[in-house]
Amino acid sequence: MIKVVDIVYHCHHEYTSPKEVLDKHLPTLGFTKFIKDRVNYTVVRHLNYEGKETVNGIHYAFFKRRNAPWQIPHKTHRYINSLKPDIVLVHGFIFPLQVIALKILLGKRCTVVLQHHADHPANSLRKLFQKIADRYVDAYMFTSAGIAGPWLTHKIIKNKNKIKELAGASVFVEKKDKSACKEKVQLTGQNNFLWVGRLNKNKDPLTILKAFSNYTLVNTTAKLFMIYHTEELLAEVKQIINQNDQLRSSARLVGKIDKTDMADWYNAADFFISGSHAEAAGYALLESMSVGCIPVVTSIPAFKKVIINDRIGFLFPPGDDRALTNLLNSLHQINVHQHAAAVEDYFHKNLSFKNIADGMYDLFVHLNSIKS
Image 1 (cartoon, helix red, strand yellow):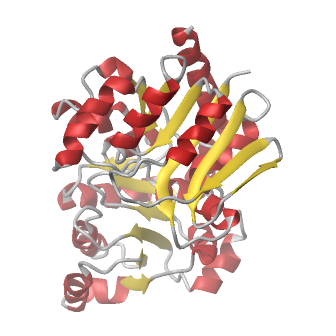
Image 2: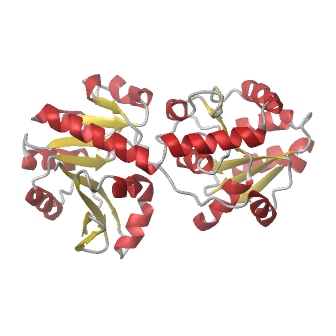
Image 3: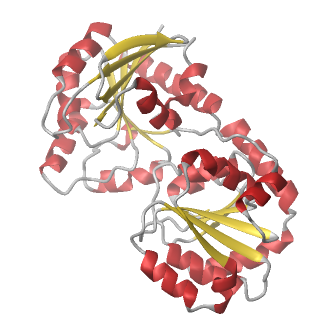
């Protein structure tokens, strides 16, 4: 049986119990229960706690460490080496020195895989170490190969054949009664659009507001609800809404919502809308789709990987409010109820934790056969 170690170097000093950190990492760990009978899987995480346990066939090891970029977690590495793993899956690209040290310790017998999250090529000394680390990394996981472009351009990844296209995360959202959820969160429109994200330039709420203003000139019953947990553009967003007659009546700034309440919003909404210019995976998109929200999102690599045709969702170029307006105006042609059912069905057949586990297992077997 292939031995796999799954490690995150970042230390959550704010957490003092394994449950806290495992709940935080659920999107990238939920698949493990579907793979535990096929591989020997060990999860290594860093927090303000140390200990080891096995739960439902998955091995867990927890260590303390500093988040200093040059600090090597020797205790963690010694433990990993004692397991004699065939494959080590490292989350994130931001600890290249640690990856180099781990690979040197483990030697050629072990395959090292880096899974991309929301990382960007560094602009400092770390970039040099990212380039050096490429010599010690056997494969890179990206949700979509298109996301790897900057890493190839900066020559951090020198061999594009190392890039493996595989979604490494999924989500679980409880399915609830739509009418009850609409009443609970007060979604009053006939076509309710939900926007979830940071109020920053990358998420681009301004393009969404401009297009939605045009859309509601004709579709007066449509409503936009914006949930956000950072406020970089809040003043500008409020100004746009307050100065626009359509948006004052159709757009509602909800603000920050507790994670446990998000299921009510996803179940209540008809459409999920996003203006993101870049995403590594798009957890909010996945969460919304899992309960049947119809996606209206940008045509970026991560989203295009999910939205394969207009039976699933709708794409528009990032920053193009005209294209989004035209797309919104075309939505009257679809049967919202039937389309929502198709989205939910597609998610559970193609994007669930079970699917992630199958893809991971196939990748592990492939990489292990190359090493052998």
